[in-house]
Length: 346
Image 1: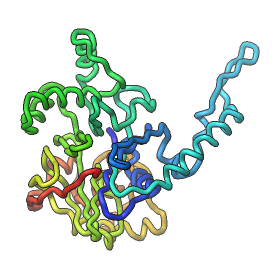
Image 2: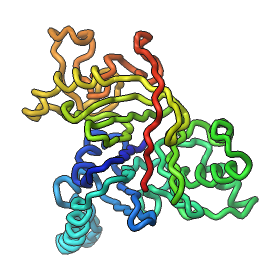
Image 3: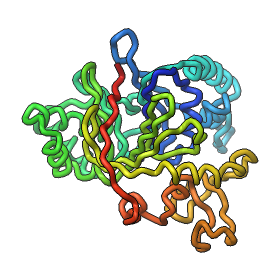
């Protein structure tokens, strides 16, 4: 599992604010971050193998400077203070430069490693033949497919990720057909459930998805948009619309199916507001979705939820439903169609 934050607006948005948003969903992935954006007409990427909390706190975890020491017949791990100081000084320079970066359009990814080591080369975006792919999901047959392509077709892989495999297969299918629905069906048949896949090139911005991962679209009053794996408690005064996207293919101008959660988002924020201001939220297992994430405690006297559930994450507060809310939706929620905004990195 990984987390994705896409921002598309007229006003610059800082990486410092983006990292703070990612902190809310860091359970989705905390093995390094990457971002893609356009600078002077060309796509650029940045990748860092650091944890989200390291960016927020401003210092590396000391475990990064561990070394093995042998004294006689006894061996043990210890922190190398000189090495830590060197690594931390290098990190400080990178951190300050990155957090001060402000962009009007970008896609930010925080990785939860499934295939491949926790290295810079395996961070997203993953480049394949001039195309970039940002992925949230896991293809379980990927290891076998990659081995087959390497051994019998001479395919070369620059990363150890299933994302690169899916990107290569997508581009192969694209040569056969431009019908994205057919491509999605074929990808399903080959790699199984693939989650959410962003495809970006100099002239392309599109998203393919299935039901195994979620994607939300948040529109701000100033005409800016946020595409995010899971909503976070943003101040409702700046939020115009909150949609859960229920469609498999997204690109500018396409009509897509959505569920409108705007009022429930506002209501959830009001419930959370006091706890946010008093910093009373905590990281434990959500009683509704059974995932360890940031939650608040609901009193058994609170009639907003069934008293069975006490610790609720922000997403489950919005949806008011227990487990598998993304698949077993409340039938009273009315599906609507909207024209997908003209989102791109241009």
